[in-house]
Amino acid sequence: MSSDPAADLTADTAADLALLARATGYALEALAEVTGADLDRPTPCPGWDLRALLVHLADAAGSLTASARTGDLAPPGPPGPGAADPVAVARDRLLVLLDAASSAGDGAPARAAAVEVAAHGWDVGRACGSARPMPPRLAADLLAVATSSLPDALRPGLFAAPVDLPAAAPAEDHLVAFLGRRPAASPVSGTAS
Image (cartoon, rainbow, N blue to C red; front, side, top):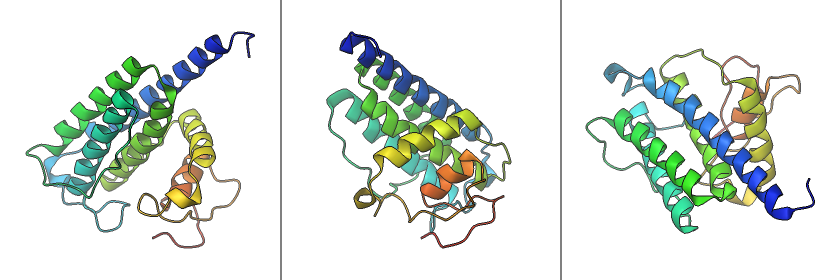
């Protein structure tokens, strides 16, 4: 840390914005793999097909954009009616979120958004059958943010209970397990709702 707190805040904010940019890039790569035939596929989110997940991702990006602009976060509601092209809507709203977070100059919304965006990027990839892993450094950075900022009291309605994993599992598996998802390639114990 420097002796100038404003310089540290700026460095922290820049790091948070860079994390959001990396998470958004990961999610956009997953969205690029979606075809029209994939929209009815199940996702790692119980009860949601890919179309519903994409609508939720777009809604969440909209809520997070509002938070970046105003400082107030209204949690996204249940998936709304499907758009003609839910992939395009989700992609466009992710790009608007990235721009709004960059303009806001506040890292807190960017940190929260990075976890949400990357988690749903992972969900999209799994729904499409993609085996492309999350970059290990991105997964480790997001895991650190998620475990330090998601108290159990906020979990209901947002994330299922964490899934137990062996300590040696990769950071990607620990991240998605912490968020209540079952990593496909890792042996797990416990249940996720």
